[in-house]
Image (cartoon, rainbow, N blue to C red; front, side, top):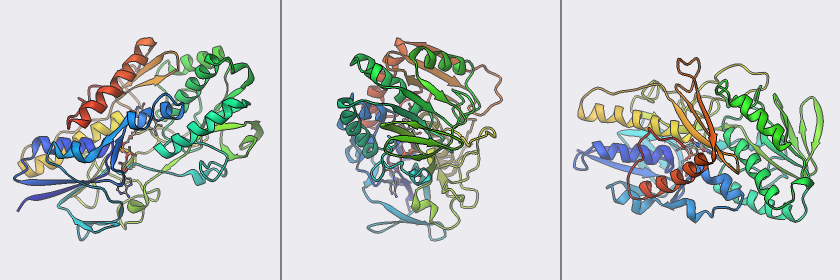
Length: 404
Ligand SMILES: Cc1cc2nc3c(=O)[nH]c(=O)nc-3n(C[C@H](O)[C@H](O)[C@H](O)COP(=O)(O)OP(=O)(O)OC[C@H]3O[C@@H](n4cnc5c(N)ncnc54)[C@H](O)[C@@H]3O)c2cc1C
């Protein structure tokens, strides 16, 4: 009988796992099914560009079904409701899917409820963690440009995905200067990080000094160790200090695991994230793996206001390679490899980019982090987006030596 592998999630973690598994496992011996609630793959790192109106959703996404079919992977467009690890089934809104091996790559749920007023659909605050949220931000920004005022950008206590808040504040500054509106818009950046550029990983070399200089040069005010407590129509409130006036705000929320995982008994920690071993295998259920944002990773250090460990796309791809390699070794024989995660990414500053590389992500490190800025990095980031989308659509993976 063929081994049945179910991959849950159709983003970086799910797609990379499915492609990697298929590369090594013969279709005659193993069937692979990818289940995702969204019919399309979206290049999430481009959401700030969607929010700023420089990309449309169709430019940064593609249909999963034909891409997966090219590699002989079945696609099921359904929403998982729960997972029963004892019976080895994924229960969706349509039926039960049995599995021999399960890879969970379901990403996050934005815990917007952690900050009263952080809508984005039922409050004045905006975010950009998903295509609907980024589209809502784009529409709010279009209205704001007709009647500009003070802006607050940043992250809430417990956030782990800090990078996009830096990208958005610099991109917005650049956009406003281009439209000769910047003089009407005081901008304040708020972050739970103890210093700029901590990024949830205890700092990235000289990034702190670079960002401090950049904020000062661009006249962007900033508050570190800031705990956003409420977003009102005309201000962002912080614990222990005066509200900051704002007519537009973008605040990255803390993340939690999706409800199907969080509500399935014995699968996750109280936040809904899955604790795994060094091969991304569940600690109790050895035929369940988790990769990407769904994985529980402890914070790098203790900070006055909580900041969680980052889980980037590049890290997600590495986790998928390791998890898939483990399943392949169990089915085909051989030794499974693992390694500590590294991270490479480029932050868009609007007029140029800054390249960051850390190996390993979690300090302490033998190797100094790399921090390099210039226009070439912005072009690299744009080229990477294009190349990734083209490759993934054709059923191919980018090597994990690249980062974005
Ligand atoms: C705004 C933003 C900018 C970013 N920029 C960068 C960057 O520049 N560089 C970088 O390296 N990383 C970046 N990241 C992080 C990167 O996007 C994530 O690490 C990556 O998306 C994680 O992939 P994932 O597969 O774990 O989860 P996700 O991308 O969150 O995908 C989850 C998948 O699971 C599916 N799913 C969810 N619930 C269910 C369900 N119940 N049933 C079925 N399917 C379900 C979803 O449809 C989706 O396909 C950014 C993140 C954000 C939000």
